[in-house]
Image (cartoon, rainbow, N blue to C red):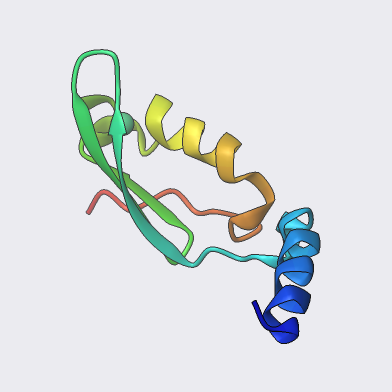
Length: 84
Ligand SMILES: [Zn+2]
C-alpha cells in the first residue's frame, strides 16, 4: 500500500468519529419491520415511508428509528413531509 492511502485511511478513521461533518441531504432505504418491509426516503429534510401509520401522521417508527440512527448527520431541523 502506498503511503498516501495510509494517510487517507488514518484521516477517514478520524472523520468517522465526527459524524457532524456529514450532512445527509437525501437517501433511500428499505426498513425491515416486524411484519413487513418498507421503503423509506429522506429528501430535502422531509421523510417518506410507505407504511400506513406514516400516511396519516407524517412520521412512524421507521422514520423515527432512522432519525435516531443517523442523528446529527441529518439536516438540523427536518420538516415533516407534506401529505398533499
Ligand atoms: Zn413507516
